[in-house]
Amino acid sequence: MKNAFALGLLLLPLVVRAEVYKLYVAERDSAAHKAAEPLADGKTSFWFPKLTRGLEKAVELLNGTDHQVQVLVAQGQHAGLWALPNGLPGGKAKLLLLGGHCPDWKKRDPFGCPTELLGGDARPQAVLGFGGNKTQLSELVISGFVFDSAQSNKYDARTNSLLKGSSRTLPLLALSQVVVGHLVIADNVFLNSAHRAFELYHSAASNETTVDIDNNFFLNNVIPLKFEPAGYKGFKTKTVNFTHNSVILNWPFNPDATSSNVGALELYHKDCCGELNLEDNLFAYNPGGAMQHDWPVNRMGKLALKNNLFFMNATLFGDGRPEAGVFVGKFGPNPKHIVVPLAAHMEDDYPYAFSGNVSFDPKVPVALVDLQAADSSAVSAKKTLMNDVRGLFGQNKEGGTVAIKNFAPRMGLDLEHLPFPAEAKAAAFGVQRTRAWAAR
Image (cartoon, one colour):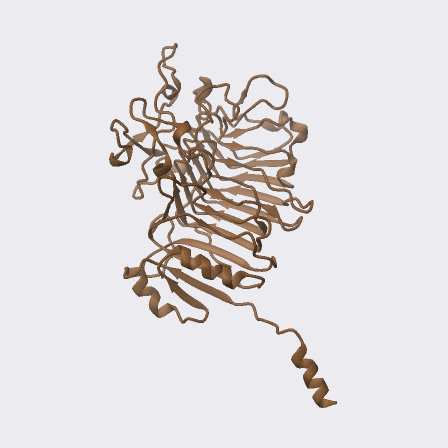
């Protein structure tokens, strides 16, 4: 009997203990590579010279397990296109993609030690993508990367404008229906996209799924973000938190007031989530509005706007007031876009939660590239303070029109002078240098 009992124990499924794996990614022979070598034991920590190799190992470790896999990427430029396969079942594993590591690996500083993901000229897909709803994760974190699609854009040197028809309009980040219990997109820079930075096209693993979009720069993108999820087994994301983001100088789909997509953030109806919270953000110089509100109010879910700073977000419509453009949209049946300014008691007109929202000039500097050259990639950025952007849309201060110029021109990435507010009282709004997401 004892032998039979022992045999029964041997036939029980082998229980694999959940591990935390750390995959260090740094260019061969770099300072970060040399610092990573003593940290990699070949068992639960590894070094890889390329992000592609690191992601391949991550897939191997994640498949059907409940491990936490941290892909730690060093400061520097990483060229390529990356995507996870559509087929990581289980739904218990955690994948943390964490860029912005300084070369000694002792500090993660996404805005001081930036990790740039460069997709190249042709870019037939998103810079970073996920396979689909057969990839299931308990937690997915994407934090500390610079996504810049200027290489795959074309610009008109005569008008200093983006050529949409010949630029790649694929998103920078494609969630591709990935199934998640908790999604974090934090501490990134989304720059120069000819279409969206990303759509919130994730699949909720349950009705308790939460999404945190925190501490990101959205700079110089065309309609950068839409809060539209993917449907999956009838689940709906419980909460989406959009916090401490800087949404600066993002563009409508077309440079005219009748374009169908104008606002920087496109609000979705109540299928977005149980509640959408927007707190401590900075919205400045988004000509088509900070948020596009095309759905009737009675089809919207819970929406809370707290402690946000709005400044000059409706110049596409000839409205240069600092407080204009909190919402721009048709609100259902209206034939034209309605421009809604920040008011003292917005709750009187809209059934949403409002508190602590303000409007004043944050004095954020942006670096626009001078494209008066055949090869726009060869010229340098000019720092400028966007105090008046009415002229960008063919309007002049005296009335009348001029030729449209400077529509979504290439923005230079000045890592030494990212567009943090120069106005002291605006410092608490938008991206915070010391707020980087930490592994839990």
